[in-house]
Image (cartoon, rainbow, N blue to C red):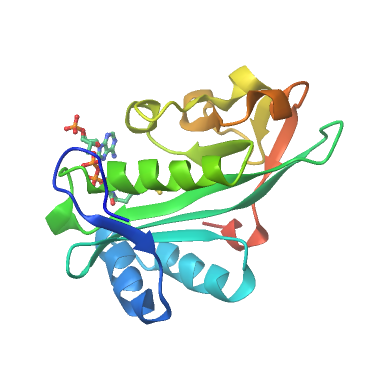
Length: 177
Ligand SMILES: CC(C)(COP(=O)(O)OP(=O)(O)OC[C@H]1O[C@@H](n2cnc3c(N)ncnc32)[C@H](O)[C@@H]1OP(=O)(O)O)[C@@H](O)C(=O)NCCC(=O)NCCS
């Protein structure tokens, strides 16, 4: 699909098998450490329900991953998706590539009927996509001491989320990240 968002327009497409080395490189360069790239590599093997998108500008310049999360303690079982990690190669940052990845991913999740998305990140950045502190929706982080404003949620299907509250549980591959 061709992105329809402003800025430097790149193609947002599903990850293909041959993208793995380029995705690893983007994360290592963006984060300046190998930990996030390693989690992405691990999840590729262990989690078949992820949504993994790349920003393609002739080469892979950005990557975003969404993985399933469950709300523990909710009255009924409900699963959503967690945005993490996301990275844009430093040479391509601040050109709207990250925003295209987020919006492209959220569009797909909406289309699939995903009830909510959560993210741990910079409030100013994620607010522009509609994320709010998750506590406003009764969702609590599994990580103790997480500041309220950095643990955010975006409700995609409000009726499905009615009456839901509890602790959002990421996949165990994220433990220690
Ligand atoms: C966060 C990241 C993916 C954003 O990608 P990007 O392509 O630069 O994002 P966009 O161009 O769509 O948006 C840039 C905007 O985000 C803001 N922004 C970028 N990083 C930010 C940060 N750490 N805190 C707050 N705002 C930030 C910029 O101020 C900019 O705002 P502006 O457009 O008003 O100037 C990229 O900076 C990155 O890879 N960072 C390192 C890895 C990381 O922190 N990943 C996110 C956590 S999983």
